[in-house]
Image (tube, rainbow, N blue to C red; front, side, top):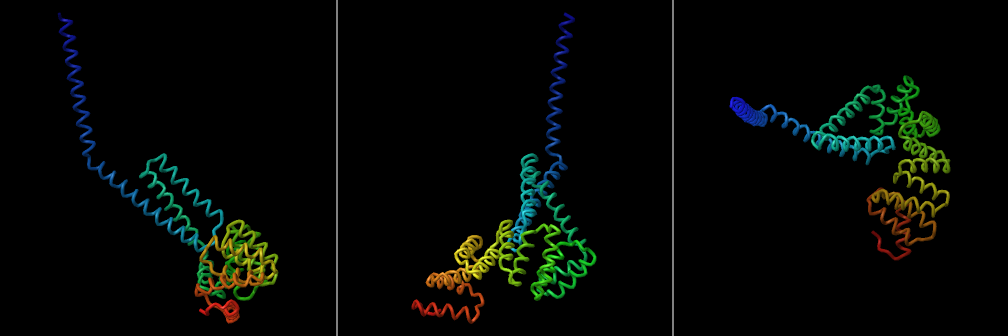
Length: 310
């Protein structure tokens, strides 16, 4: 009887304990849910996630603009691919919001590093780049001279000075700078070969120019390089090969109207005069400046085919 009483007391005590424990758990959960600090933390995470998405969107737009306006190497494209992989990894293993926040942090760190690298460049180099971008090539050359005196292996300075010299008529000196930039393994190699191709063109070394534009096009195809190579093929009377380059350039950039003028020249030389007139008129519609010789050829073809003058 006494044992039964103890047993009943024990069971009753356990039930009371379990009931108390359940009540405490519910109360703790209520406290946890209603904890204002927890709400604040969740709000911060949401803000960080939104900021991360805005940073990624802004950064992506900037990268697209930069890619559109610059020659970009596979190194840069690989870096962008790496960013994408990091973003996906963060999202898959950290959740969508937390992943985006992590990726945004990484992105900001990389932008900060890029900024440090740029602003730790010598003031002469930055001044040279700014002058080069503004078309003040004499000032650019003077600044790049100072950079190279301090840093004889500064590949970017050699490449920029090469193109600046080309613009000011110093093609021979420009060639030496381009050769040095390529030997120093400048990261944007397609740009190095593209610029050297232009230098070879001005020196009348057309086959070497074609070879350089071919290297640049293999690494990073661009409408500019293809049209330049096509124009060289026209000069060497390889008009059918030139047409392939002009068509490929338009496939890459349908608005690169200089391809139409080169195409017109190739077709004219192949005695396909009506097709040549069509190509010339496509160029004319762009509103680009035309020399008297260019306009005279179009007018002559219009008279030949009885087309109305524009």
